[in-house]
Image (cartoon, rainbow, N blue to C red; front, side):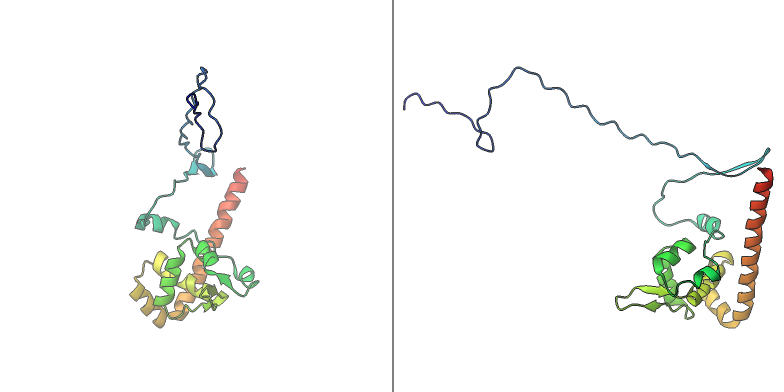
Length: 189
């Protein structure tokens, strides 16, 4: 027992090999990802004018009033024929069309009596075609006409017919504008 050799074991009980004289190769550090500027999307181009839309990186937090105003005309609600193909639409679908958060739609539901989506047992909101029409009215008053919530409530109670005709007129003019821009683009190409 005088000459017992103790051998060092690794974590799994296997003997550790003698140190070798080989040098370890340095591990290369991963390259830092470089921010690449996204190219601007050309919306309209003619001989004298080029209109580009630069895609912004996701800004956190609330949008400014200027940013809200810039996107007020850009809602993408389908026409009535397309809407009538389904009975109910989820809150996320509807929020996507209006380019707002789902929380804003829930808030408008609490504030405006005309907006009453169905709720499932689980509590999910399902919007019918008439709810989407009412949302269009509310959106038109709050975002395009710049009414306060209290002002929009009072206006809806007193001028329901007038607001319907105004919204139809705005929708018609928006459709005409899109048609004319598409026509102008096709003529220039």
